[in-house]
Length: 260
Image (tube, rainbow, N blue to C red; front, side):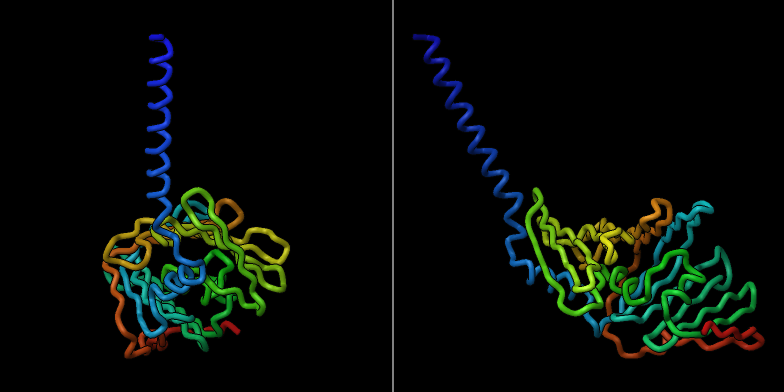
């Protein structure tokens, strides 16, 4: 009889553990019960199209030529406005980039060269070592995901452990997958071409309670080497009233070079 009593207590103990584990599991996944379309809308609107995001950033660039850490000032507005100034230890910034939907300008003070042309990915790649267009960079750096350019996008979503996986596929076959955590925060993106080959991936980390976007964003190219990590400080999100900051005029005596 004592053996049966001990067995009964053991069974009761196992049942209690199962109930407690079930309660904990339910508590961890309850946060992202919103429909996927509402989650996507919330992520897309973290920084509105009438807002300007500005920040100081620590940028760590990894290439086949090694590591290149720099500090920068970033000013961004959707859908394709970008200003980037790479800061020198002392004195004037060593690199200026200003882009709008119609025009991109780059000034390199040490060379006295001023470049101007269309904001294409090919022109951008002449100065920055990755083939991502301005539109996609702006969307990523404002803490959301870039759009697929084709029409007829199909969506598919399902849960992976405590996260929600959302797949987007265009008619051409190009696609992207995003992962959203249990707090409805975007934490991973994978972009693929029409042949289902990965182009790049993005990690969104270091969320702070008072900020709608990730404090650290890391873009990794599919070559396994090239990556850029942006760690924000002094983030400001303000209503856009003046877009002149996204226009860069050639300084006196600078050599003008057309990109197109």
